[in-house]
Image (cartoon, rainbow, N blue to C red; front, top):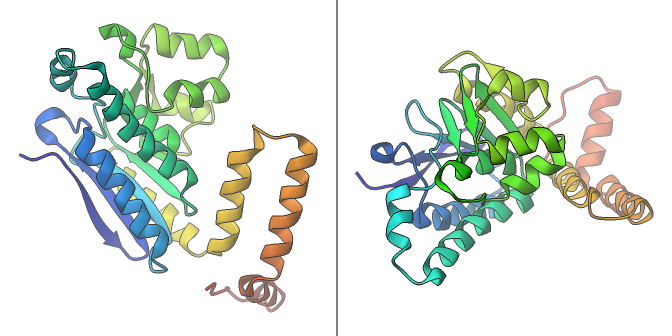
Length: 259
């Protein structure tokens, strides 16, 4: 079966499904390019308000295909570098995408699959889902921004355990640590992610885009510059039509219908 990234619609939500069942939904260059293209389409479409990324069947994603990596050892280093650049383009596209992105995780999210989850704005995971950065077990180091994300979210000693010791960590523990947003019964991750997506779809898209941009910039700028950015976003959003809709609906105790 061909490895692919399937794209479907659930109302105003685009669902991207990692489909490579023969190799436990392992990722590859064709999926990276498809992921970037899908987000470009979603960004320009007013009909898409959010994106959910999930895996086909009982597993989210096994990360990289070890058979492909083994073959790449016999190729010039540029071959693997180009492949990782493709993955990183997808990670950056998720991070800068102006609409909410939710990972819906069943089974395992390993290696780059874990990194893919960490790049999303929300993670909804089944109670028996497992996350692992198994790179060190095969004498490799992380990619996909996993070490960057974890180092900013968790204590150093726990990050060392996850990255150096390839320690598995389950969804309830990651929920306690603030990385997983929702823990759901086995088999319900996608359904619950879509419920969350629909709630987000009811928010003003321009406001969510501002929030995401401010969050992305917060750790890499000074307080004074960030305050200036908050001011500019606030003023821009106040003068957007959606602010008029939202304020009027609140005062009238009605549900807003944002553009």
